[in-house]
Image (cartoon, rainbow over all chains, first blue to last red; front, top):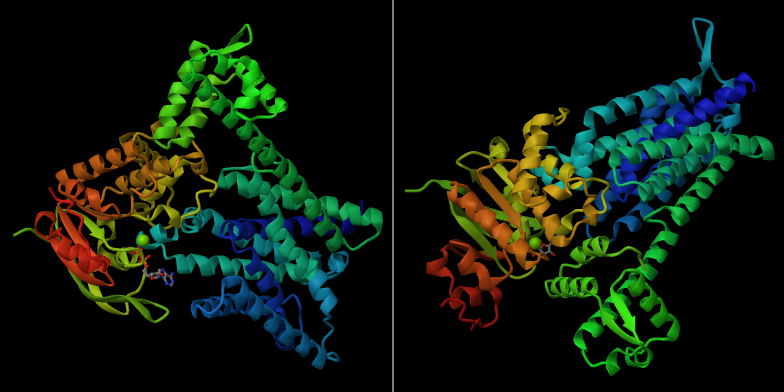
Length: 386
Length: 244
Ligand SMILES: Nc1ncnc2c1ncn2[C@@H]1O[C@H](COP(=O)(O)OP(=O)(O)O)[C@@H](O)[C@H]1O
Ligand SMILES: [Mg+2]
């Protein structure tokens, strides 16, 4: 592996981490769309910054462009506050306007600006190692490494310092406000960090990858954990994993690095979305099937409890009586037997003591609407789930 | 004469320039257990948010024991409507209760063992200690409400504002909550509760405020909780004889 290859992977990983941190909070605040808006509407800021500084890597340019990002958020909120349109509509109104202003500015000045739209949207990570930072003539590494490294450093310091405030205002804005932690300040703090990260990263990886790196790792992590700190760590791990595997994928295919990383993010998210243990699609479907069987089981047990009459409890009558198909009756009967809830003597079904106890408690909970208690109770009584 | 815990003068609050609370004057004496009643959209939640500085009123003023809310924050605890937060948020019951200690900690400082101990005690008080490490989406509606109550208890305030704490809870939880509220009053605290079930007002509360955009009436339940005020507040002709 050459040093340029290593540098590209380090830059991509730092960008991934710098994006995953604000991305986690954007996902939890259901503001994924806003990062899309920011990443596009910073374009006029970048162009104006470039006119002034003539240097795509100047901190002033980054600051100017980040301000455009924050202005986007202000405009979106202003339009939303009029109550005429919803938030996503407001976002859809603001960022195309700002983005197209940027595009027109580039087109009008095509001769003096070597900026092109493709580069803005997709970036060119492969070139990042060629633009070196020289300090009194000494080569200290690629410029984008220093830029994104500094942004990441600031982001981590802010995260550690204000973790509690971020968590509180994300979970409960009202309480945050009443305790004196202004949600407005925290909101704009997060928006500023997101904007600065976006600008700092776009030159290397482009606007589209920035959005993908902010949202996809956090959304995948959200499906896997119920702890905010773990969610942050997982987002970071997913981001770095996609960055490095995407790099080698691109190397192998001889394709765009940003494109490959985005593909990896998509594949990763899809895999988590399908296979996540409790929130994944497959787990949810499995649980629904289990729930259906267990509701049937409960119905069946209640039926047994309500009818002493032997005819009502004859195996053959169950199919007709509760109006179930054979398969279902059999599943339910098997489940009840496996859990020692019923006994079958001469094709007559009756509740065991355990079955009777379970049913009595279940009725109690149903009467008092304590559905969650039934779930706890299943844990106590069931040896096998449906 | 008893002290005034909360004093509201000429308060008007608007969303998008449309006033939803008009010119409210209200005095809440110290040590009452007060219900705020009124139909949906009457502005009950808005009133609480305006008192707590969450919303900025377009006119009027609020004072807590004679000073602005900002100066008296540490005296006040707030339980928002349960539906106002996302219960899928990745956090545990204990962590939510710990949030009640953030106010006294101030910016940047983290909760320590001392705060954690207080949070565990509050969980114990509402009977939720066994659930301390549960993810909050795994709790029933009643349990979530108890967690919110514990979070307010941990603030150890003088005045408690609660927005519909009985919404969607089971009978056992309702009794547990009202008993804790009555205990708070006994300890000299002022408790203000947005309440929906008119049937239970005389049984649970000693003070009541009728609200529907304007303040209709406020005072002791035994004096003003009657068909006349109910009719004025709810518009329809109220003929329930709730009182015995
Ligand atoms: N964020 C908001 N933006 C605009 N209107 C709102 C907002 N919140 C509440 N309202 C409106 O203000 C009125 C009072 O609301 P609220 O205080 O929640 O009533 P209550 O708690 O008594 O049911 C309602 O008409 C409601 O539609
Ligand atoms: Mg309300």
